[in-house]
Image 1 (cartoon, rainbow, N blue to C red):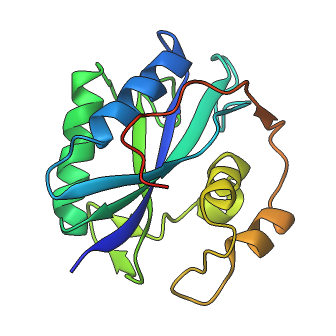
Image 2: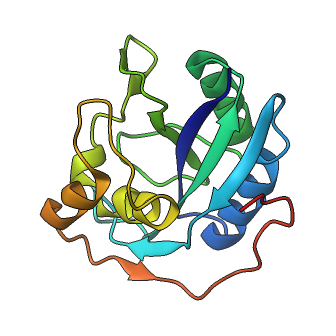
Length: 170
């Protein structure tokens, strides 16, 4: 049975918009997975250390037959292919891919927490989710729309549109 998974994308190194656009194409090629929709891209100040460039963020909606951990393995492989280095917490990165929501599942182990533990505090994750599915409800019953209204502002700015991936089914 397929699960709707919402993936957050972020980058602030090596042409971040291009990094995200390429990642969307790579996510569309995952096995047992269909790319349903892609959000706009947004720029925002970094969370944590401010001595780094602004981030570009977005999200995709996937429909997948993979488990959450199988999907995580694929996301981490894509990050590595983009040269992701984990040098400091909340530091700069070429590509960051996070499972924000995975169907109705709530998971918490040493590798994965779903819904993403910082989701409610991240306008750069909530706004793309709102773009993708305005009526999205988390497993605990909270709506993305309500969380977005309550979320602290991080100077979020919508970027001009890029060509969308041709494989979208929406």
